[in-house]
Amino acid sequence: MKGSLLKNNKDNARKKNRASILGIGVDCLTLEAAKNAICERWGSNAGVFHVVTANAEMIFRSSRDRELARIIENAGMVTADGAGVVLASRILGYSLPERVAGYDLMVRCLQEAADSGAPVYFLGAQPQVLVQAVEKAQKRFPGLNIAGSHHGYFQEEDEEEIVREICSLKPCLLLVALGVPKQEKWIFRNRRKLPPCVAIGVGGSFDVLAGKATRAPLWMQRAGLEWLYRLAKEPARIGRAAVLPAFLFQVFLQALHIKRY
Ligand code: UDP
Image (cartoon, rainbow, N blue to C red; front, side, top):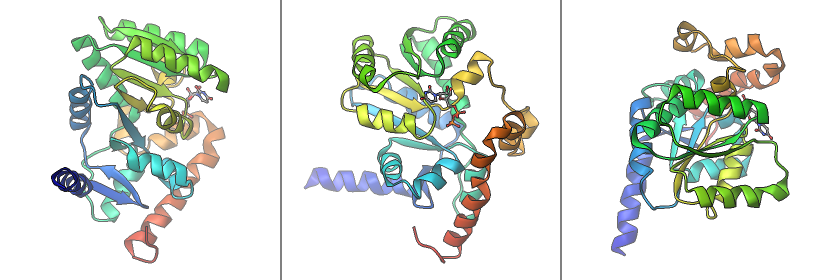
């Protein structure tokens, strides 16, 4: 009884600090606060702490993909990965303090891991890109303990072996770069088999770390225009970028109470 009361109080406190956007809870956190919460967590034995970096496309997709919505609902932390999500929160009357992009969060966590000796595992990206990402990480964060890595183009039957390897290496931080929603579903599906760790879905972050993809100039990031930069670099993403107006339209429907989530 006491236990369930405590749990309810905790759940309520968590809900209060979350913006609800199209039914998806996003934590009101700065980049620094997100990094600190992750680092506090990675010495503990309390299972897998799943961190989702949610952009507008992911939130829009999860309003149509119940499995993805359920996974995000159960995540330990959901950050606002994109200017669209921060804008949506303002429209809905919440105050998400800033954008917490997956790449920035990964970089901060890698720096902390290097400083504290926490072992890290890299899963995802093309084989050659992964090799370069690991090399770059090793150079950029001296002392970083990269316990292991595996590219992201494995067969279903290889999954068990990969999970076994991660269990034997016991990383504190597991970076999963398989793209959305594959990475979220992979972490969720394997959460009970994986060792206690913080698992973050980091999308195309290994490509950026490896130098295969570049981030927008800082002024564009600050102006919330990183999506435009990515679109200019990879015009094939037009279909994905087209989701943004549809996302904002749904946000307005939610704000005007025309649609309930
Ligand atoms: N990827 C992978 N396995 C797959 C599909 C994709 O490892 O089966 C990798 C891909 O090589 C890239 C990342 O996942 O490094 C997805 O990048 P993207 O920029 O599309 O990420 P998102 O926008 O979905 O976060």
